[in-house]
Amino acid sequence: MINIKIFRKLKIQGKLNFLFIVLTTIPVLVISSIVMQKLINNKREEALRNVKNEVISIKERTNLVLSRINRELIMLSKTKEVRHLIENYSSSQFELITEYNPAQNEIIELFKDGLYFKIEFINSSGRKFSSIFFDSISTYITPKNKLSRKPILFYVDVISDMKKGDLKLSPSEIKMPETGKIVPSIDCIFPIYNDKGKPETIIIASIHAENFFKLFTISDRDTSIKVVMCNGEGFYLYHSLKKNNWNRLLASRQEENLQHDYGEEVADSILNGKSGRVMNNSQRIIEYTNIFEMGNSNANRYVVFTEIPTSIVFAPVNKLFITLIILLVLVLLTSIIIAYYASSMFTKPIAKLIQGTKIIREGNLDYKLDIQTSDEIQDLAQNFNELVVHWKVKRQLEEQQRMEEDLRERKKYLENIIANMGHELRTPMIGIMGFSKMIPRIDDLDELHDIGNAIYDSSKRLMDTLNLILDISKLESGEYEPEITQIDLNEIVFMAIQAFSDFANEKNLEITFSSIESEMLINADLKAVQSILNCIIDNAIKFTNQGAITIRLKHDNLDAIDSTIIEVEDTGIGIEEKYFETIFLAFRQGSEGLSRSHEGTGLGLTLAKKYVELLGGSINVNSKVGVGSVFSVLIPNN
Image 1 (cartoon, rainbow, N blue to C red):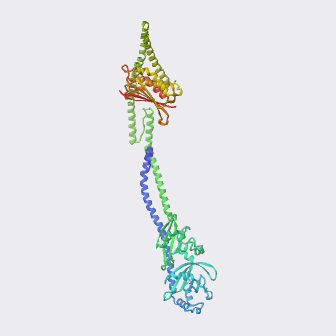
Image 2: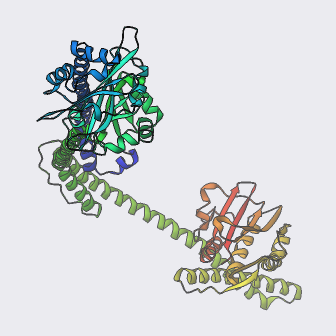
Image 3: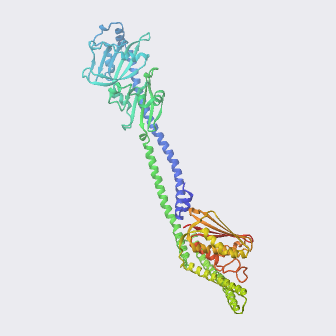
């Protein structure tokens, strides 16, 4: 799901496109997903059914052939001539049997045009007493003198766990007597029992392996598909990938078998079940079924299975899935195209609205939006035009009010300047003039001394006022160039305390000083720091009638910047919070005009702030009326 923050950052066209795509594609995706899942499941089931049907088809064909072989061998064992042959051999009259006895002729008549290419009879000891070969042209009966007198114990061992009516298959290779050609074959081993239930004869009917292999042909010709037939012990009777190497299939039964190739778990599933399916590592499907069972021995049970890669089984499913994905992509692309053109109908007039607001914001209040959409957006544009007209009128009124307020503020500012400066300049000038006029008439030296001091104080006050004005003028014009040197703040504070000691003593005020270090070294402009301290200390003494002035120095590392903080705390009259900003403006005080309660130009704190800002620092005040004030100056050690 799209992140809400990202969605909010989208422009309106992006949001409309997104919403349109979501509203149009989600139903299609949901329906398509359901349909696709159903179709895929159907295709998957159909593919698995096809695999199962192939195995069932093999089973039916194989069972049909094996049932036929079983019936024909039972029928053969019950014919009169064959019984006579067996009885004669069992009664030790074998030597009296002619080369072409009636039993052999009967076998030839029964099987010369059939499935078999060899019929042999072996006694219970493994000795062969009749052997007939068939081919498409002639029939060959092995002469008695060429029959091997050596017992064939393999077949005796094979029938040891068989009972009457059982049939067992065994792969073999037979050398044709006339041509010497080696023919791969499947031996159908069928024991015949006497009245006492003991085996007296073994019939071995051999069929061509290639004819037998045709039973296991499936419709799919992909060479990676395996078709395998094995007995209940896991030994291969047929293997589609190994059928061309028949010798290896026969000779390597202990090394190449079901357990060896597939592991015990898969082999047990195939051999112990009647039918079923095994997913081999999710990459191959094994479909198996029990096709033939003669007797209780595992060697007499036969299983056929196919091993098919899932890529082949589910190829139709994958093809359907890809088709549906392409369809969904086409639906999505169509939705995007429709969404783009549909949203453009909304975004183009909105873009005009945005352009119009930019033009109006730049000051062109005469601009009019021209949008003709015959819908709510056109109404919005008209209302917007009316709003601009209303705003223009309101702005003109506000501008007029602001100008009137500025005029009133300037008038008040000028009145303060005139009042403050007039008082600060006129008062000492009047004192100087008045005392100077008195000097010629004074004969007392003490009185003359007092008048001289008064003239000095008035001159100093006048000079301080002029210096403040000149310093502020330099700072505001940018003419002042700071000289950064290393200075000891402790020494600067001591010098300032000495300079103001007389002023403090006159008001019975105590000045205390504390510093966290014996040397407070900083890199700053000496004059600027001295002016800052002088202005703040002078201001503190001026507005404090009793108590003390406390000066503190400490370090600060705010925002990883090494700085020094100067705090000047007084117990004076305090400042109302509404004047915290005003007191730093030129010619402004907490009490202004002719009715103000304390002397001063109102330039001291203004000058201090300008010096502090020049040094890259800051100045703040925290005060309470009737309690006192604390001025804090932060100076970076730069």
